Every structure is written in C-alpha cells, then in structure tokens.
Image (tube, rainbow, N blue to C red):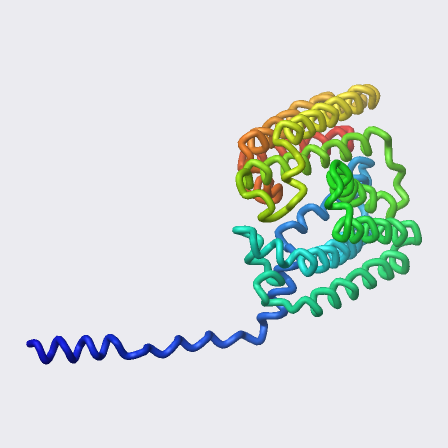
Length: 319
C-alpha cells in the first residue's frame, strides 16, 4: 500500500501539460465586428420614423422605402462611432465588469481593424445619405458623426456637455427621417423628443453612477464628477418637461374630427405619462443603465407603449 501511495504521489507531482487553446473560428472577426456595432441598440435608430409618424405620413411605399434606407444609413453611422469609441476606450473597458467582454477590449477585434471599419462605415453613411436621400440628410449625418467623434475624443470628459451631446444624438435620429422626407418638424415634436431623450440619458448615467459607487476611476471617469443627487434631478426635470410639452401639444392640436369616435390625441396623454412613470421606476432603482433592455424586456412598458401607439395612430387617421 505504501508503494502504491508513493507511486500515486509521484504521478500527481508530474507537471501537467497546459490545455491546448481552442482554435479560433474563421467567423470570429466578423462576429466581433457585428457585436461591436451593438445590434441590440439598433432599436434606437427606429426614431428615424418618429417625424413621419407624427405627421401621419407612413402609408406610402416610397415613405417606407426611404425610412428603411435612412435606418440603414444611421445604423452604419452609429456603428462607426461605436467602433472608434471601443478602440479608444479599450483600456478603461477592461476594468469594467461588463464592458471588458466587448470584442475590442477582449482582443477579438484588432484596434487597427476597428478604426478602419469605423472610417469606412462613416464614409458610406455620409455618401449614401447625400446621394440616395438629399444634401440636407447628408449634412445632418455629417454633423452627427462629427459631434459623436468629438464626444469620443474630448466631450465625454466635459461635465453636462456629455449629457447634451448624447441627448442631441437621439434628437438627430428623430430629425433625420423628417429631413429625408422633407417633412416640417414642429416645435412640440422637437421639445418632447429632446427632453424625452435627456430623461433616458440622465437615467442611464444615474444608474451607472449608482452601480459604480465605491469604484472610483475604474471606468467612466466623469461619473466621479457627478453626484447621484444631481443626475436624479436632471432625469426628473427632463421627464417633467417632456410630459408637459406632450400634453400641451395634444391639447393645442385642435378639436376632434367629425368622424372620430373619441379625442384620441388627448387620450394618448394617459399612456404617454404612464410610460414615463413606468420607466422612472427602473431609473429610481438604478437599473436603467441599459435602456434597450428596459424597453425590450419589460412587458408592462411594452403594453403601455402599444396602447399609446394605437391611440396616436387613431388620432393621425382621424378615426
């Protein structure tokens, strides 16, 4: 027994061979680039349909085709920004518990490839918008890309300006569809959309600040400059202004059409306010750090959103 035990001990002391690394698949780089383009956040680009929807101009094939084109172009522009941003922030992302899995930070996408693809997508988006839509759409996408790249390089480190830049990015999405289709943009549409975007952006920052308390300097450095009380004030203020602007627009939009069953435009204030209040629950808990997850996974919010869309559609159709 003693000899057997010593044999087992010697066997256990032998150096083990390191495990062979798993062979990298040929599709690793394409999948990494796709993940860096943030497919889950493409839902934000659906805002390009906001202005045509507000104007009741979604029925024709031309409108649908043009909006699909604008959606693709804006998605390409946003993907270009994500690629450049991840390439620049790779070191900070590696210190984050979630962002370290991003393909550039994890080493799945080389930095040079990220920069090159970002430049190509930006060129395609601007050129496509100018040629396939109109010059104003190309100028708007150029302004969006310039602002977002300035954000990646510098503006993300400037207090309050960083909130304004991200908010303006949402607003530009909503404006692009109207500009591409030559639809006038009303002041109420711009105010409601702008402050609604600020509500979501500030709630996202607030949630990140709550989750990262006690880990100063680990990731987004500017969060250390904001207090959670200030960010809470911003998203509460923005939510209030967005609700007020929407209500004023609904009440000042004229009377009810003769063939309409109910004042749908005025009634749409109810689900709109409920949607804001529902989203505020997640903001208050500090769990609104990923707006796309809140929108896609909360069934109650989805139902309220569908009710609002139905009422608004009935108002536009004068039914």
